[in-house]
Image (cartoon, rainbow, N blue to C red; front, side, top):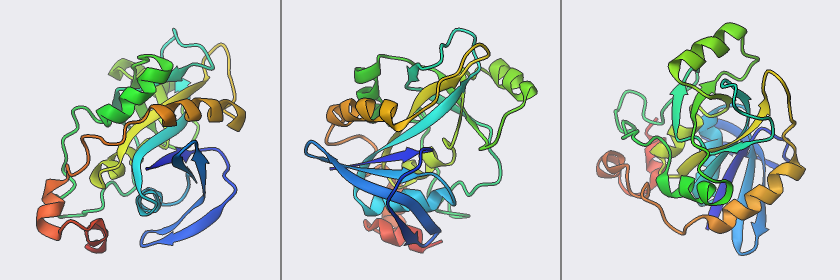
Length: 231
């Protein structure tokens, strides 16, 4: 079983070519008996999701350094968001442009079995995450997103989570609160690796998103390579 970790941290590894451009750098390691591929964010999100799928990713963890929108969070807190408000623009949001084959149920938006493993490790730290642009946010955005119900803002979450949904990779975000109005804490590899080790051990060998893109399977067949070849 492979687990993909989509990360904002630097990864030393190979860059791979996909139909959507280059993905990575990425590196695969063994955590006990489980294969874990760390994929550095950058470029087209479709490329890194395809790279994860090529390596047999059953689960995907979207690691992020989050900005607190609510006053009750402390820097250094781990969160497992249970919902998302997408505030990004411009990035490709589907593998099935104009075909409707990626129109999939979003309640809940994250894989319940994958998220349950995170909750098992860090506790039920539920929060609505705002999928934020990958740039510094403005004070007005912080205020507006709070009014909408967002409690943290995380760059990189969209369209990553939805693209994983289309290719049936059980996805959930793992957020580290790195900034609040009163304090900050840097996300580092030394902080990440112990928590990833625990989560990888807790992940189940199956989840309910497998086989869930019935429209793509019906129209394009069981081989997911044919799904992305139809672009």
